[in-house]
Length: 182
Image (tube, rainbow, N blue to C red; front, side, top):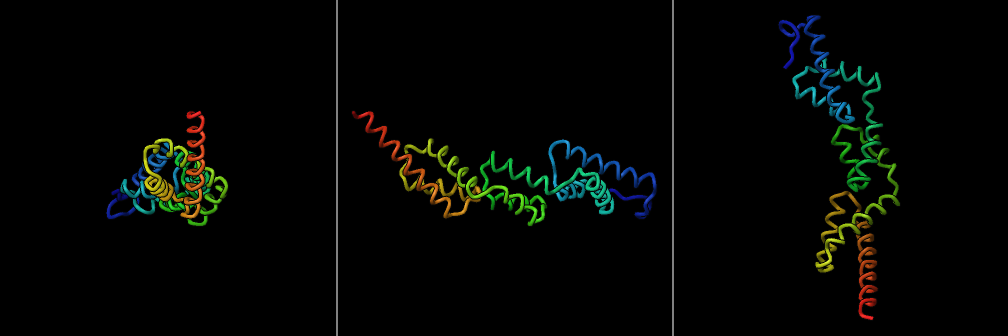
């Protein structure tokens, strides 16, 4: 733990050294990827920096515009929805775990509208269906529901998407069967 001077009294040399070290830790973390204020606070706490040093450095970084939880949340939502297929509920939960205020998280997740969420669920189901051709419909449905639930999709939407995609996949396979038997 960083302690400034004898008995915790701040001495100019050691206090500024702790501040420089804390700033270096934050810059290293921010160079890897954007971070929330809370993520940086936790990292500094783990490294043993005292509360005054942590809050001073975080305040300076915030004032300089290097920490912006709202911008982080928007970027996180776009990335995790596009690449991981996460629904709004899961995105809000992840952002809250990262220390983003609930209202900021909800606003950022609100960028994903119902239609985009449904289309992403359909893409996930179609992709997963390709590897489930040998399974019975009940097993397929159960596994697809589990996958969508883990990604935060509402149950009603999940059932609807799976039902439609199974119907479409069945229609396609029936059409293929008709073509091959002719």
